[in-house]
Amino acid sequence: MLRAILTTWILAAAAFATQSVEGHVVNAVTGVDLPGARVSLFQSEGVAYSAITDSEGRFRIEAVRDGAYSAGYEARGFRAIPGFMDPGSQLEFRVTSAGGPLSLEARMQPLPKLSGRVLDAAGKPVANAGIWVHGNVRGCGEPKCFALLKQVQTSEKGDYTIADVDYAGPWVLSATAPSSLRAPDSAGDRPLGWAQTFYPGTADAQAGARLHLQPGSDLSNLDIKLAAVPVHRIRGRVLDEGGDPAPRAAVTLYNGFGPSLDHLTDQDGAFEFPAIPDGEWRLSAKRDRDRVTLWTAQPVQIQDRDLDNVELRMTPPFSLHGTILFDRPEGVPAPEGDLATVIAGYTAGKFGGDQTCPARPTDHPYGKGDFTIQLYPGPHHVDLIEPPPAQFYLDSIRLGGQDALTSDVTILSDAQPLTVTYKFGGGSVQGAIDGCGAGRVLLLPQDPALRRHEFLREANCGTNGQFEFSAVRPGEYYGFAVSADSSPLWYAALLDGSLLDRASRVTVRSNEHTNAEIRLSKW
Image (tube, rainbow, N blue to C red; front, side):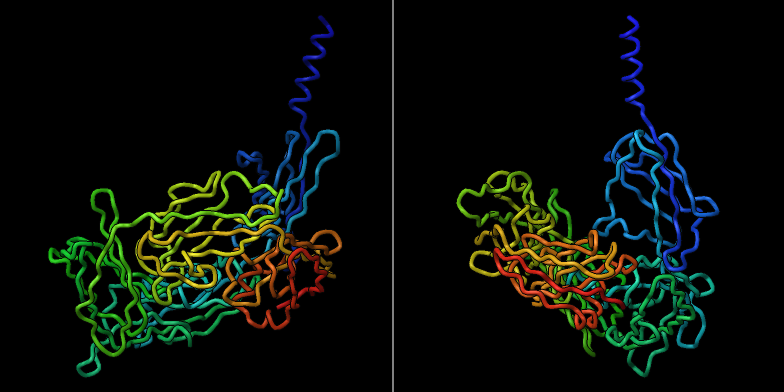
């Protein structure tokens, strides 16, 4: 009886074995203690424990049960290094009662800050104006360019502050007038309107100043004077697939990097946008009918004139069948399970992979790799969201006989199947980088047509700066590394061309090991 009681007590004690986790959080730029930071210990089911750092940036969590954890850090105006989305950010550690208290050290990077005012043509402050911060001047999907980072409104005094820009790097700042702002006085018989204005005061997106934000930087007095420009009318009709007028269809006008304009068609399917500045725009229309969404989109160009008689003909989606194939040596089994998620994003003009009406798989590709996606007729950019299976790389995407990997494709019906091919092997790249520490290494294809997320390879430096990539698609790459303090590497790689000028050139050959001499870059 006593032995049974002792056995039960020992098992219960083991089940509830605990240990302490303590640590220190500092400002990565100044090295100063960071009070008030929230520290969370995560397990697979979510947050298991949390604590707030004291005035010396220290924390202690008692009675942490044995097990595997990862740590996360949050503080207003800071981001953890590495960040939540950065490779290696969720490294696991084990808590065990057999050892002493576990000690964690963390650094948090202060976020850049922007502030200024929006002014009208007379220099008066504009309340409730929209402030837009972009990673690039075009509104399309990575890796071609980057979408909106932040959007705020000016106060009643016309000023604004953005204190939580997530990443350093070059950004574009713009302002839009509120609908309540009176239109500028016309120049003769030409009506004027307020254009989306890029800092410091131009309606030309390409001429807007690039703001090179660094960790902890505080850029103030970024005043934007709204530009008054000639405006024109866009007028047309929306039809259904049978050519009949479509009443109460939602029409959206969008320029890729600012607010969208919305309108509902009247009983005759007519719509009108009365005051639109010159530029490239995209018109789209949709309406739900019998649980099916009719949709269409097309680019339009406004240049010194009104645009009348625009016709938008909506269609229902159709099903496109596809197959995932594996090019592999004899004896190598094909991967099993959920192999990929395929998305065909409708494109129109400069707008890249527009996910307003994406086509997502209706059947996930299990087993044989067959899948079906719903999409609308038109040009599409085909993406694979899931990474390639282990030991395979993406070799090709084809629509019938057309290449859908390096260019967009026009898909009008289900006549041609979509085929995704993965290939076994590839090459490997390894090396060691002096001073890399916990920095990151990136391989970026030299061919701009291949600069899509499936071919951007990123890894953390290991012990002694070592790194390795496996199953790399054969070809020519840029290779470079940055410290852990830097913004996410692929932002800088694609937005800062000078970084590529300093990169190493790496040749990857099939079934070969490449020792790459990659240096740590600073910018």
